[in-house]
Image (tube, one colour):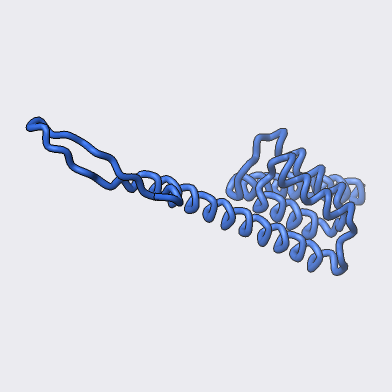
Length: 152
């Protein structure tokens, strides 16, 4: 009672008999608050672990430690620009496939996807296939024109 976890209340029934009853509502309220705090701590811990994983993925792909500005850029993509970590990793993958190890290039990829309203891995894969098909078509047309000129 002193710690305000339980309370004792007196009630009267229809016959006028009084009864004491214990109420655990304060205890349940405090347990609920503690449970919510624990869940928030777990979410924060998971986000911190994910951000460390994101840093290590970039460091592994770049083959060097990230500079403080690059770390801040990564953090801004996730926290301020609200890009999912999966989307940032997909942008890194696109940059690596293009052999461009540059944060500005990755930022341009993310901005391009944002303009096209691309938010999921599936959408990225579909856009990537479409882009590669168009590049292949351009190369084929260019090669055909070169062969035609060469034959003349």
